[in-house]
Structures are given as C-alpha cells and as structure tokens.
Image (cartoon, rainbow, N blue to C red; front, side, top):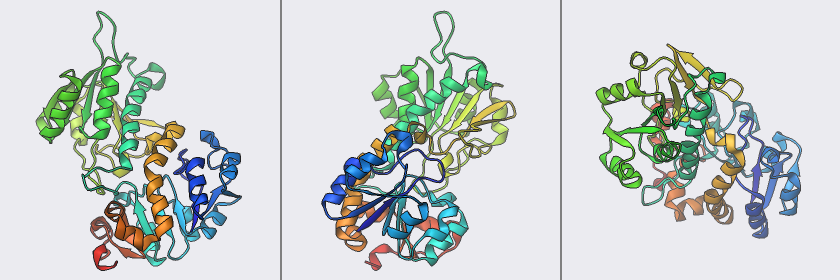
Length: 370
C-alpha cells in the first residue's frame, strides 16, 4: 500500500509517523511518501526518512496524488480539497463536529474513507490516540498560563506559585478528564492553588485520590462555576464530548464574575470551545481580550512542542496504520472495533452521527456495509 505524510498546511509542527515507524512499514512491503521538509521543524530530517526507506516528494500535490492513505497529524485543509483522490483514505484529527460543510461534501463526493483519531476508542472506553495528546495539552496549558500572566503579554504579573507572604495564583480547571487531570498535576507542581470542577463525581474522586486533596474539587453547576470564576486568576477549559461540539459552559454574562486581567485558556477550541467568547487564535496572534478577560485559544496546542507531540502520536498511531496497510481498509475495520469506531465516512458513506446532525447527510451503520 502507498502511504503519504504531507506537510501540514495549518502550520501544525507534528508528524503522524517517525522514521522508525516508516522503516517498519517499508520492511513489510509498503511504500511511504514524505513531503520534503515535513519533519524539519521537529528535527526529523529528510535524510532520516530516506534512510528508513521513504521516498521524498517535492510537492503537496504529488504526495496526495501517489498515496492510497494520507496519514496526517492535523485536519484536512480546504486548500487540499482538489488534491483528494477518489476512494482515498484520510487519517487525522479531523474534528468534523466543527468542520466546514464544503470539506465534508467533497469527502463524500470523492468516496473517501475518513478516520478521526479523536474517535478511535478501545473496548475499555479509552481514546488511545487522543489520550497522549490530551496529556500534552493539559501540561502545556499551565506553561501557557505562566507565560501569559506576565506583564509583557498583557497579564497582571502574577507568579503561579507565589512566594512566602504572597499567595499563589488561583487556577480553575473546568473538566476532570485527561486534559484537566494533567493541568491539575502541572499546576499543583508549580505551586498554584487549584480548583477542579466536573459533573462526574468519579472523576473528582480520582483527582482527590491522585493529588491527596491538594486540589479543591466541586460538582460543576452554574452556581459553582460562577463562584469559582470569581476567584480565578486563570481558567482552563478542558471539556470533551467524544466526536461532538463542545458545549458553552461559560457564557459572556458569566465573564462579569471574573477579575479584570484574568486569563482564559480554552483547550476545547478544537471542538468549538467551551466558552461562548472563544474563537480560534494563531501562534502569531495567540490572545485577545473580551470585557477585560484575556483569551488564549490556539487549536492543537501540542503542536507547540512538535517533537514530543510527534513521538506521542506515533507511539499510539503506528499499530493502526500498520494493520490498515497490511490488511486493507475493509479487513482492518472488521478486525479492529476501535478503528471502526474512528470512522466519520466510509467510502463516501457518512457513518458517524455527527455528520447527520451537523450537515444533514444520512448516515449508515458500518456493520451493515462490511
């Protein structure tokens, strides 16, 4: 099978596969095409891919044109629409719950198969591809908080951990999943006072068990969220509903409960954001202010540590890619229920309910098609 690794047009610094995994794919009889300089920013240079047996191609169009499977780290860019081959397989963090209708319609027209890393789920309910990405995102959120509370970025000039005689910053984490748990760990390690809110009491128990009651926990209600917002120097939004658009659990009116100069970091922005006032930002313009509250809303924050992000993604993704390449898409889907759950579209047929909900395209049950 021919597999392609393109440069990410979004500017995402990660690659989906490392030279080591490429070598394993080539050894089992597959061809891997890597776009020139795809890994340059993360020090996975072309020479290493060539030594692993990959072929270096010099244009984005050629990678798409010669590959049966496109293995991306990020979602499809609208500029790539005309490059898609009929019945091509596209793997990536597609986030189609907040996707562009033009992209979705084109994917259906071209009879593509679209596998979203964020949907792949094993039999224990774990999202194995999303999990390490969320671990990185949670820890990164605290590094972002420390940086953007500096006066140079427009912050109030607060040290996360405080010093003797000066209390630490108050960090509120909305959501006690993987992102929230890792944010809590990093924030406590930095010496911040941490409040974690979630609707799931089991997740809050896990927070208390892991961190020995160093973090304050509370059931998330409108009132408890408002009370926490009033105390916060930093609020981290870490809400995930598998495959769906994130709900706005903090509306614009609730910002008035916050202290002027506080910082919001919306780690749910890939799925639409969990603050009503959130909108995607870029590394060149990462923050904006609404009603005196600074917002940081860069999607795919693990891209900021692209080498770690690449290694983390590769470690969990490679077995799925190898199985798909060895068996072909139909047999791989039959053999692997986790991969089957990752489907948005199968050979142009919408599969995931969000496609019907958001775009009005009738979905079918994958089991009836295999």
